[in-house]
Amino acid sequence: MNTLTIPKGKKVYFASDNHLGAPSSEESLPREKKFVAWLDSIKEDAAAIYLMGDLFDFWFEYKKVVPKGFTRTLGKLAELTDAGIPITYFVGNHDLWMNGYFEEELNIPVFHKPQQLKINDTSFFIGHGDGLGPGDKGFKRMKKVFTNPLSKWLFKWLHPDLGVRLGQYLSVSNKLISGEEDAKFLGEDKEWLVQYCKRKLETKHYDHFVFGHRHLPLEINLNEKSKYTNLGDWINYFTYAVFDGEKLELKKYS
Image (tube, rainbow, N blue to C red; front, side, top):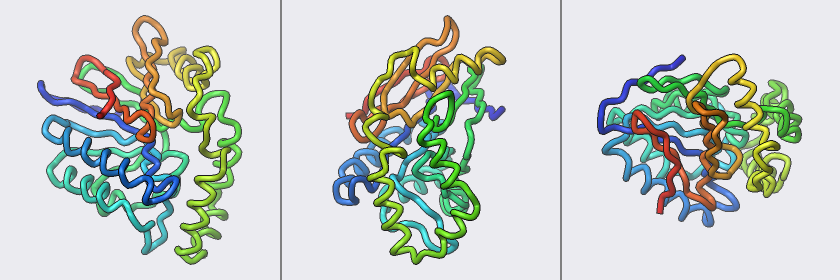
């Protein structure tokens, strides 16, 4: 379990699902500027920041090339880590293909699976949330293709101009990967991440489960001592979670 101790007056922040670059670089630029402004606003009291996936709508790391753009976001992340604020990244279903760039250039560790986290005396289970639980079947099928070593090897031999353009097109248009279904509340009894959390609680207690992926800001009590929080997104809601050492709250940036 990863552990983090935060002093009084400091906070831990969680955000997810920016999908920068969608539906186009021009249209996502105002959202990127808003996200960068939020990062700037929290730098004074942030003990740590957890970015929970799908920061980009498409991301693929060639050996010497990464997708063009996102300069403001990457520059701000570098500024924060250079200032000593630890940032942790969880890959989502749109940025599965990270392979060292964030670690080497930004000093940001990257996780591909959910992690246990303890902040002071509070226990968390956190991740992007894709492919967990009994649902999300369309993505689970697609993920097997996307994470297959042969698929990645073949894709990297496409010229970056072609590969990135193809990836961006598929990312925006393929509703199995991301679409309107992510923004519909299914009812607590049908939310597959809620079901996943309840199953985890059968074997171990966590005070908080924090995920993204669903594109909905949600706070659901799983029992008297455990809560599931979904972070929403930075497309329609501009929501994030903040933990002050005692309480986790879902907030909106405006």
